[in-house]
Length: 388
Ligand SMILES: Cc1ncc(COP(=O)(O)O)c(C=O)c1O
Image 1 (cartoon, rainbow, N blue to C red):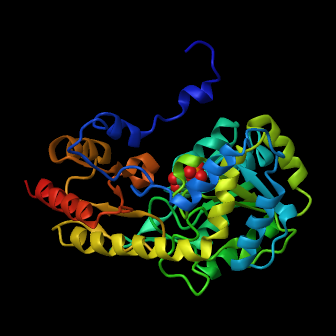
Image 2 (spheres, rainbow, N blue to C red):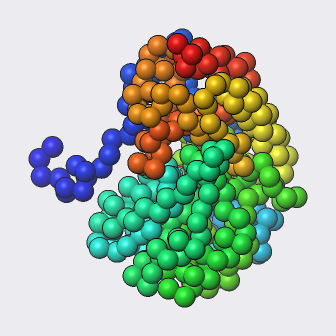
Image 3 (cartoon, rainbow, N blue to C red):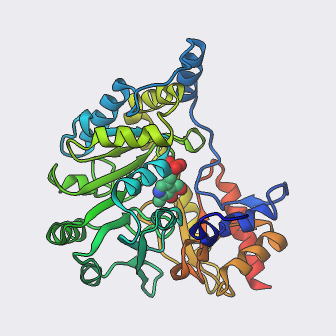
């Protein structure tokens, strides 16, 4: 393509797509490659969108989203964390758009972003698109395959020159989740260095070790309102709404008008009928989310023992998120392994290299499925493939 910015040419093509594109139209393939369930959005959410369209709600909304939705999000967030007012909420057209807005607000050419990796590649690509320097700080797996953070080393990597610390917890792909004392240490350190924390907490509710609130530890639990903290959220994962493209940001008091301007130049606003669907989702969150998390837990607990029983497979039980992240015999070149696995055994999973060099040798399996038998059959096929 002629004369685009070099940074665009340098963006990595999705390795997950590279595996999926080769086999997406094959009906015999069991696909576990993308980060979504095969369960459709529940009818009560879909009905709200249909009713909105039937009522002719086809117009722009406020840049920050319908006031009603901002209030509902603020109530939802405040039901799990210390109170957040609706003046700190910006509705966005997806979690990924929320992340990009946070990056646009905070970083420009040459700014340093420290990102905890491996991680969903969009997190590190977005600051790179804006010209920022991304320093990767790696989690490390222990002997059982559980990924861990060296908080002290991360604090040493974040200096006064670091503009943003980017953390995704619960983490895609590893399932690693920040503990409260780790969050506290990072927050205090970032206060000292003047570094912003951008916390991607889109899997906050998809957490299997939660307390009564049913949520993973959040920076919102410990931060003061005036801390340099932006929290990124999405309707995608906890309400089965990946295709709807709806998310939100929690920003510091006084920052929302600036985000309204940024949203104007990105998407102007989220579609109103999608926002109505979001309102219906939140109105029923207490009934819906715990049931979904239980179904996901059953998926996880079906798949993990089957994977572990395959000789040579190393996989820890993820505390949160939708993924089993594992090593298998022969998975050293994860892209080649994933391509062969889909071609020869009809099982589609994501290569760990898609999440950065730190994920090389690993494989990500999304276990969110309505039908546990699909997981069982997939595991059988993997066992057979590995044995041959
Ligand atoms: C870590 C992480 N953040 C953000 C997102 C974005 O979700 P969405 O754009 O669907 O709201 C995803 C989606 O997979 C993710 O894994």
